[in-house]
Length: 70
Image 1 (cartoon, rainbow, N blue to C red):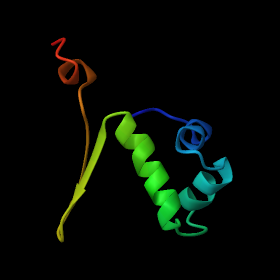
Image 2: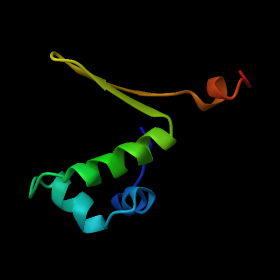
Image 3: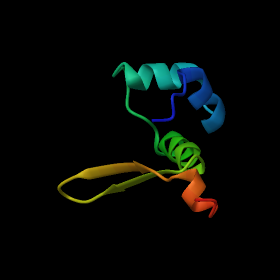
Image 4: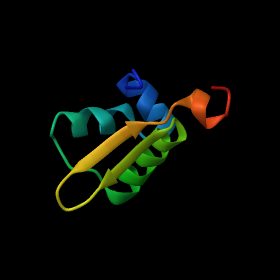
């Protein structure tokens, strides 16, 4: 969706690359503060995450539509 490397995500979220690597590898869960930092990094790029009891939905806002150019 965003085509980020672990290093890019870590940099944008202000966390270490090892935090991303370890979470992706199932080595540990995220702390709430780290989860918030990651969510903010994604949201700044237009990713929207929604959930209810039955499903999780992830979408990417069209940047052209958001700024009114299309």
